[in-house]
Length: 210
Length: 210
Length: 210
Image 1: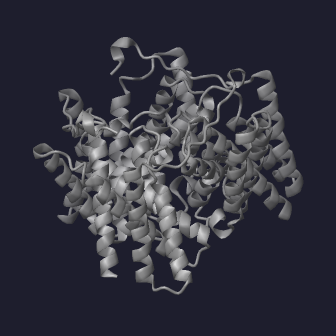
Image 2: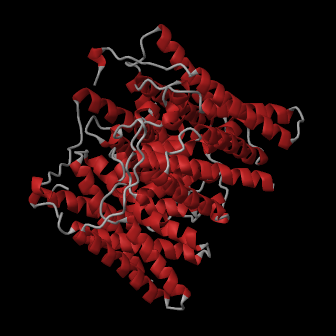
């Protein structure tokens, strides 16, 4: 319980840092930086809670999340003034955050006895929706939708591993750990080897274009 | 009951195809294609259910919707590899989907005994919000907001026809059928004759520009 | 009670005008103008109500809001045909709307006995989220996130003033009035003197760019 909660807070902090750095790249003002850090960190879990009608929403019932986000954002701003942005550490932290959010989001849906497809969707939404809102607000096509390294797909596979282990009778803790490990290993394999999903291209004949 | 549900599944499948094709035009990867197909197909109904506090949300309580969307997306991807994309069939299918979603969304709000303005809004949201999220995620100004053929307006008129027939004592089934027919006929009339709503232009004097 | 409700309706009308003018600048069609006016006016309060699980949502339980928005939009369209758009009056009206929404949103969260950080977030969301959705739909980076005059920050300070007065035992009405006044005064001070928050810039070394 306390370990999962601690991991969750780490995930929120990590995503806040990645959101703050993304906002800095777009030269937003300080309020913009806080907003982007907030939506990146709590966006996915908030959509999950609204869709599943879980109230009060996680960051309303426990304000430690907001405190962690504000502290992480402030630290990022101060850090960048005096040192190089932690770009090298970011993919590691982000993979950890993705793994944590995907599995914890899936567990929440699983405890509500929902079908597997919905469990996979909720875990994936928890892991990637915050980053999607961040990209929409900074006026980009969300990174996770574009060709790149495997990202959301690693969350889906990790959740599937978790669900299979659970249905095979493995304990929740071990299943969670192995599910998260799957996400992290797949994510790094994909970054190192440059793996990506195929792109779907639809070319319209010139004459058909609007 | 079963006919309305079948029509609803057809509407979901049709919108998934249109979402998948839109994602293909933007050269998204396979995960991106599935996400855009999903939000296009279930986005409007999901916002309606959240606003009306209807839980569990339609695709959580009935996973046939997700299955239809995944199948429609897979079929679209395979189809485009071997044949021309079904651009000619798409407007027909899309008009059908719009008509189905607008009237079924309005009926849901009507059964909750809400005011007519709210019923019209919920039907319109169900019909057009999925496409709007699709356009925002692929970084466009939503198509339904821009000058073009009549789209959302046909849904509004169809819902109004439905509501007037209902208040005149016509049976729900006949009112629904005539409401949907109104949407479809108006949509095709608008496509064939190039009808559109007037554009609202505000020109700022140069000196006033920020 | 009736004064607060009247002020709320004025705020909704003001934001509808600002949304309609923004849509006109993007040359949207009439449906697009109504949609942008609607989301600008009710977007923030709707997100607040969904996050706080307050149902029915304010504009569903009281359709006066929708009527005011439609009337304000129609008036804006007619006005722009015959006269200069009311650009000079807009900042005044917008500052009033922001002040009203921020304090009334905070009060709603306060009455639910939520922590201060959540109260500040709900007030800020109520005040600025509608404008953010407006900007996303018209394909801009939201204005409130970019460097400019102080906007969201004035709402945050106003809410903080309100909360401090309340905890010091000042009556709700007087605290509200002083909170709103703080927002309005700060907003105009910032416009007149060109005050803005510092920008957070993260520059990636060329070699690190993706």
